[in-house]
Structure formats: C-alpha cells, structure tokens
Length: 175
Image 1: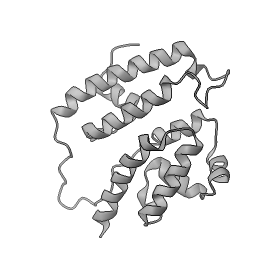
Image 2: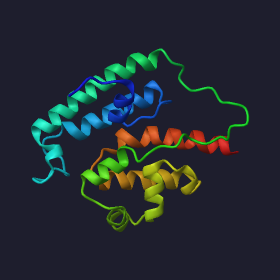
Image 3: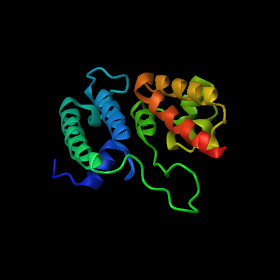
Image 4: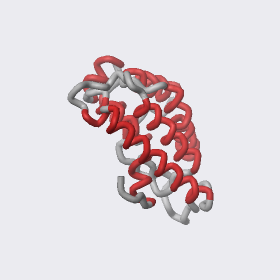
C-alpha cells in the first residue's frame, strides 16, 4: 500500500469531497463489515479480492483512509455553503457501496430485481443515489432499499438509516 492522499482516501471510503464526518464514518463502518467477514456470502474461490491477505490489505487501507479523512473532516464545516442560484439537489454520487456490494455478490441489477420484485430502474437509482428516479414516498424507498441490501448480503442497519436521512433531507428541500 502506497501513501494515501485525501483523494485516494475518499475513493477508498467511497465518499465525495463534501462528505460530512458522519457520512465518512458510516461508509468506513460498512466497508469494514464487508471486508472483515471470513465467510461472507459473496466470497467465491475465483474472487481474489476477498482472499484473506487481500482483505487484510484492504482493511489496512480503509483504516488509514478513515484516520486521514477524520482529521480533515473535523477541520471542515459539516456541510458546504450553498451558492445563490444553485439548484437544490444532492451531489452527484458515483455508484457507491450498494453497487460494490451487488457486484461483490456477483449479481446484476436484473438478478436483484428478480429476487426483490423491485424495478431495475429503481435499483439503479438507489445505487446512484439518484433521488429523482425514486418514488417520492419515503416508505417505498425504505422498503426497496432494505430489500436491495438484504439481497446482496449487507446488514440493513449499516446502510438504511444514513441513506434515508439523505433521501428525507432531499425530499424536504423539494417542497
């Protein structure tokens, strides 16, 4: 593992440049859970990424990235200032932990849709945190999200609360 800078640390923890300390911590905790399990449901012999030594290296990088970003996040305000005339929308997020967990489980969006009975376009919107592509009722979003994470083997309590907080915040800004 080479030296970590802020950009690499953010990629490692899958957080954007404006992530709050809470978001960084949630991502850190989720990634630790994914990579710490010896008998994870997505571990397959051909997936060298989840071999014991590879997971140990990834866990070390996750720890280092978290330590580096915690120091930087504490020095920054919790949320970036809003510029006048800027639209109220969540920052563009690449496929995050949800996409990584789905891929690690060896599943496509269509396979997850078949198991959860949730439309693939809603699953894609969940992965990308494209809130406009989701139904407006938070109860539907929570149900779809819970089904999604359980299907790919991620504990719902590790993802759902933070995700729903972001969705509800976005939803309330739309009014």
